[in-house]
Image (cartoon, rainbow, N blue to C red; front, side):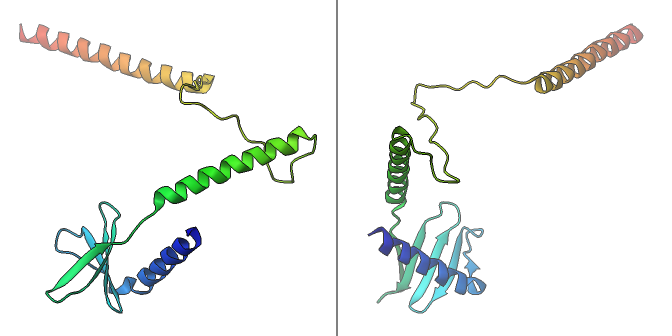
Length: 153
């Protein structure tokens, strides 16, 4: 199923690339991009990313959303990562080295884990310099305001 979907997406991408020179924006400030196909148009909503296939019907044109299984792909990627991590752990548990280029999986972070990175000295120096400049400008603004008040009196 995933291979069929990948072939479909690749085909759509090739069709879009081949017809890219014929793409024209819709009158709605360029929200839609149309690419001519043999039996209609491929419509891309530039705001949402939704792709639709538009074809001639008995009365005008009709557009139908192209199915997108992004969630299926994301789930498969997560499953493969988990499987890869388990295989690496099994290799390490048997006392064998990981293949060249393979790195051990980092420990999985749970939703309750929060990683706090403390600033280094260079970052602290930059913040202190910024605060110092802001404070200096604030003091100068107050001094200027006092001078203006004294000159008006």
